[in-house]
Image (cartoon, rainbow, N blue to C red; front, side, top):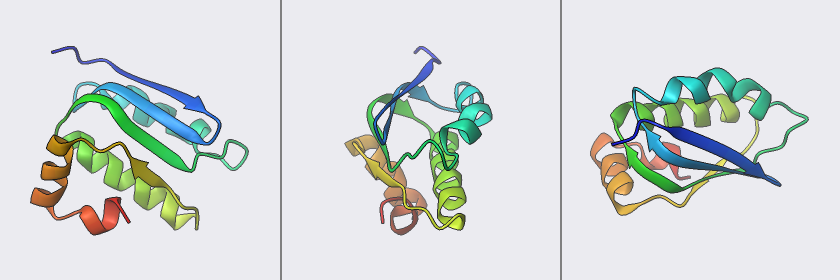
Length: 99
């Protein structure tokens, strides 16, 4: 499995594609501040392009959503696969991540 994570912004949606796991997420995590500053308005993250997300990737999404919420901004997570939804349910973070 490729450990590549890519992201692209179109208007107010950030599209993630590839693999979001412990080996691939650091590049995104280190670049998140310019992506989520007040001048660059991201309202949604679309995960439909992800082929694999592990528990570390899920934890990153939860942390990111918390950072955005702490700034009183909203961030919708869309395009959640069945496998990721199962992981979300297992870890009990559905109310945090998808609301």
